[in-house]
Length: 430
Image (cartoon, rainbow, N blue to C red; front, side, top):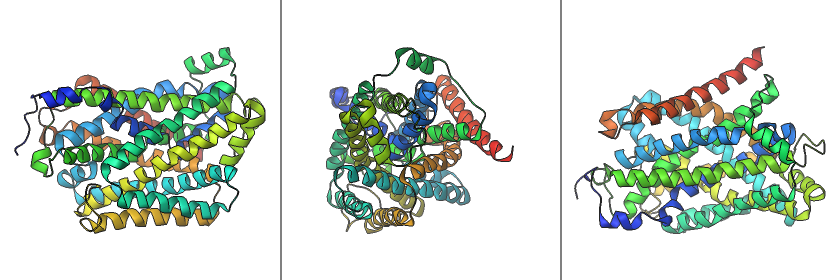
C-alpha cells in the first residue's frame, strides 16, 4: 500500500461521513477534557466567584477546538503521534524537556482524578478511600491490558454521556437568569493571585497537554484499525477526512464546553450563593448541593465525577505511555497484545501505580485537582508552540499546512495561555 492521495475521496469515506464519526473521537477527547481535575477546578471556580466566571466557557471554546484540531491534523497528515513527530523533526534535548513536563502533568492529574473518583464513590459506598483508589485503578488497568482498542473506544463513548449529569444538576439549582446572562456575556477579571490562579487552572485544565497527545494518537490508532500499519501507509490525509475531523472535533469541544459551563453554573448558583466559597472535597461539593438544589443534584454531581473518571484516567496513563514509547522508540498501540508491546503496557502500569501511590501522601482531593490544572497550565504553552510550528512546516505537513484563519486562532490561543501563566507568576512577586 502506498501513501494516500491527499486530494482523493472514496465511497468508503463518504459512508463514514455521518453521525457515527461525529460522535466518535472528538466526543471522547471532549469528555476527557472534563475530567475530575476539570470538574474540581470548575466547581471551585463557581463556589468562589459565582457566575462571574461563566464567560470563560465561550471564550475558551475556539481555543479548545483549534488546538485539538491541529493535533488531529498532525496525526492524520504525518501518520505520527505528537511525540513521534517531535522525535523525528526536533533535537533530542527539546524532545526530553517537553516530555518530562507532560509526563509529570499527566501522572499528577491521573492521581488527582483517582482521588476525586474515590471521594465521590465514598458518598455511595462508605469504605476507606485508599481501598477505593486501588480497586478503581486495578479495574481501569485491566481494561487497558485486556480490552481491544475498539472496545475501549466504544466504552469511552458511553462514559462521555455521564457528563450530562451536570446539566441536570445545574437546572435543579434554579439559577438567577439575569446573573447568568451577565456572567456569560460580560467578562470580569480581577488582578489578584486567587483569581489568576483559578483562571490559569481553568485554561490549563481546558487546554491540557494530554488532549493534544491523545487526539494525535487516536488518529494513528484509527489508521491502524483500517489496516494502515506502517508510517508510509498512514502518511497523508484527504480533504474529506480533514473536513470530517473538523466537524467531529467541533461537536466534541462544544459538548465539553457546555459541561464546563453547567458545572460552574451549578456550584455558582448554590454554594456561592450560600456563602460556601471554599470547596475542600468532592464529597463536600456533592453533599452541599443536596439541601440547596435537592438530593438528586448532589447525587448527579458525584455520579458525573465517577463516570468521567473511568474515561479520563486511562486517557492520561495511556497517553503518558504513548509519549514515552514514541520518545524512546518502543512499539506502542492498543491494537497490540501485551506480549507484542510489553514495554508499552508496562509503562501504562507504571504510570497507574505512581498515580495510586500519590494518593497515599495525604493530599486533599479537590485542592490537588485544582493544582493539577495549574501544573497543566504551565506545561501546555511550550507544547502548543511546538504544535503550531509543526503544523506550519511543509516537511511535516506537505500542502496541508495551516490556513490563515487557523493560524490566527492558533497563535491567539498560544499568546493567551502564555499570558495567563505569566500573569500568575507576576502575582507571586508583586
